Length: 327
Ligand code: ADP
View (cartoon, rainbow, N blue to C red):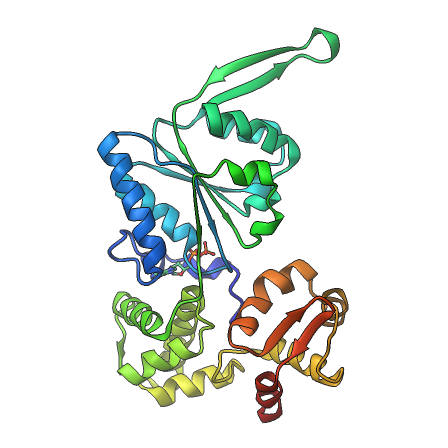
């Protein structure tokens, strides 16, 4: 339930997809990043140019895709959405680039996963808005250059260090998404509750904000589970803190937003005398990919000070130890 990765149900019904803010004004939090992007958008509109290429990075569920859609809306252009694994064959990326119109946005999620051949095609496209196509094979092959309209690539990644430096250098604007503070999260929960036509006491929205790991996607997901509980278990019209507590207990989400997987990770460290335990050992013991552990699970545990990364491995902090002893 508190996995920040995108799950299909996150925006299945059209009505719930409308939980995504549409404009910069509606976009809650991330004020510094918003200010930087707002200036770039205004400048691009003033000069009637395409926005410079943008790289957005940070843990999943913090609003990178949403921000790409917001930028397109603010610029009055379309945003095409894809992800690097869908661009494996050169023809996938050629097709996409040739289909773009002037000033449009191309959003590529998980951009660190682009193949070398896709990256090679992208370099001239990003820099000179030109596609270099090789026609034929061997000694008779020819290169043909095709001009592309000026477009904006918005790349998103949870692992900025895994992006090759030539690709990274081609982004004019790079912005990091951090976890949201309680006030902003509560505002997001209240906003979503309004869209879902739920009445909620302030304490209840604050409790969801506390348990969502600083992540709007999880906040919305928890809110939907609370709504289910309210509908089925007690038919309450007004959602209060007891209802939030009871429904999240059912899903084993504790008061800090940790689930059983997080607690297993912390317990594992505790059983190794608090660490250090290497990432690979930890991942093998938990049955998870090291990269997922590093970019999806750990960032929040680091943020709340339950875990530390050292060159020799992961260490459980005193706070982490205390938390695990209480659960
Ligand atoms: P990412 O691309 O970083 O994984 P998304 O942009 O898909 O995250 O955001 C996940 C969900 O969280 C969205 O559907 C949206 O409803 C919500 N969300 C994200 N950022 C915000 C925000 N700043 N304000 C309100 N809701 C947000």
